[in-house]
Image 1 (spheres, helix red, strand yellow):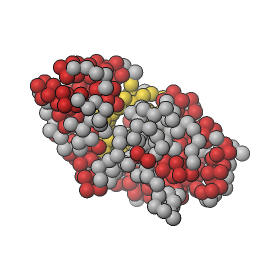
Image 2 (cartoon, helix red, strand yellow):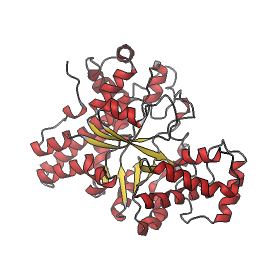
Image 3 (cartoon, rainbow, N blue to C red):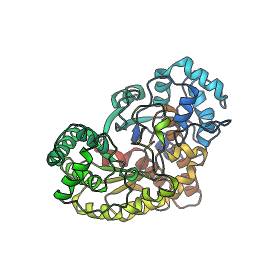
Image 4 (cartoon, helix red, strand yellow):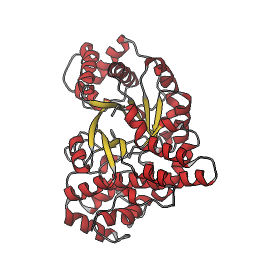
Length: 408
């Protein structure tokens, strides 16, 4: 039977122009690779769990909004009836094999271009080219700043050469990239001093860093230096600078992938979650305003309203909802509605934040379309937006804004 596609499943009647805009191929402006190999049930459950850790004994990550949505919406893509049991679903997944599962789900997402964060330097994950080939889409790389810094730190150079080599390495990697991305939120928090650090302070901090080069970068001076080096490169090449914000993507050391996880390591605990609030970036964002560097705030949940406000205040700031869309599943309309209460329509973009499991890529696209369809239908029914307005907004969020920002 034909493979279902995420955009065949809109939940409400809509004018033809609005429906066509929602059904159009989207640009996934931030995702990570998905696993190229088969995995155990335990491994798969850690991939779909929001924290990347095993479910408590006697429970399952299928008993989550995302888990239920996988059984409802991904099962038909694999040739099963909706609501197949977890055992049946995973058996069918193993029968098809990872390559075929990835092909069906990535292609079914209805994405025309993937921008792939290669920071999780893990052989088990598909490369951007592989994501594009299996998804029948274009693909470009997003360079993870902290991974580039890690490679420089481990190269065995003197502290006095650290800044120059880091700058050169970023320039080389940026030459093949669509954007640069930082996970500073999960290294030292976003409330860092927004000024550029002095050369002397960088050399002193580099000396401490290079004494233990395999450790994770978390020195606030070097994080600031890395960001300003990235600003210089981004400005030269006209690249956006992405920031991972909010609580998504945490605790990934249990994902069965070397390197301690897919998002640069475990996030701060709940008590430190406020350090990932994008509002803390206001000083840094303001400092970039005259430099012409675009800032994209990724994920942001549960601080998406703060991110939407920043996008409204600063002309160079954009925002996406990221994996919150897939993980809220049937509740995605609520997240999108809150964003659209504040964000300028030309400042919001679609990004799945997908990592590890192709199901999350498919679900994010599905739930974005379904959630946005509900929001648009309500606006039209209330007479707030015309069908032409709604169609234009759906197109901007789905692909138009990303094509302009990333020059696709």
